[in-house]
Length: 286
Image (cartoon, rainbow, N blue to C red):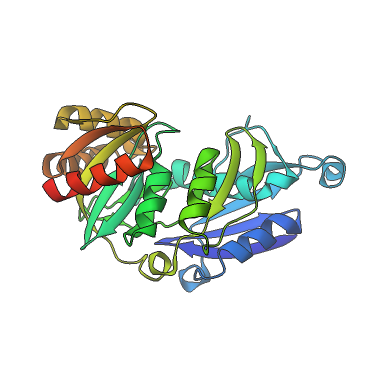
């Protein structure tokens, strides 16, 4: 790769290489406060490359590769190179992570205890995590929560928070002095803008937290709450995990322990004010 950068997010180190300078320059800026991989050795490599030499210059399109690949993945335009890099790191974690049980979830922490929020794309978990961070909660992670099968603790993985469509203006208003990435328009999920986690989230990303509450938020519905039984929580979290099957017995035991010890609630909400009030109420009751 012609251009390279290295960074560590929580316990995971990445080496990102690119045929173009632009995606690396944006990564280096947005992740400038993150440390390098431990001992300089990354856990995963990400490659952003042109399928043919002339595609570096003629309508450049970014293919995503690395230690683990999806052969038929469609390339992205160079203007969305940051998104390609983020997707590349997600891909390596989803296909190659074996130390932790991965849950597709946002996670925040208060008083040493973790709130996990998981759901379908568009459920609002990233927005809620960012708003809670703005209110003093520690951001543990956005895209993935890392559950350690040995301890049952959630480890920090505070990646850039991926804000989509209406959530962009909401967070620009809530955190006017925060650092944001470039506005990426016309992506497969509409407009995307990345939010850099605050300094507290980055400085404490090595500190794990004990699960306290699992929340299944759903944006765009009348306000409603219900208890989610452990059996349903277990099934929904297996669906939210990209490596549950690969971890086999370790994954089963870790998830069983989590759902036995941690209450879960489903939360439908029409707006963020309603959601934040409900989160506080459910958190205190858990």
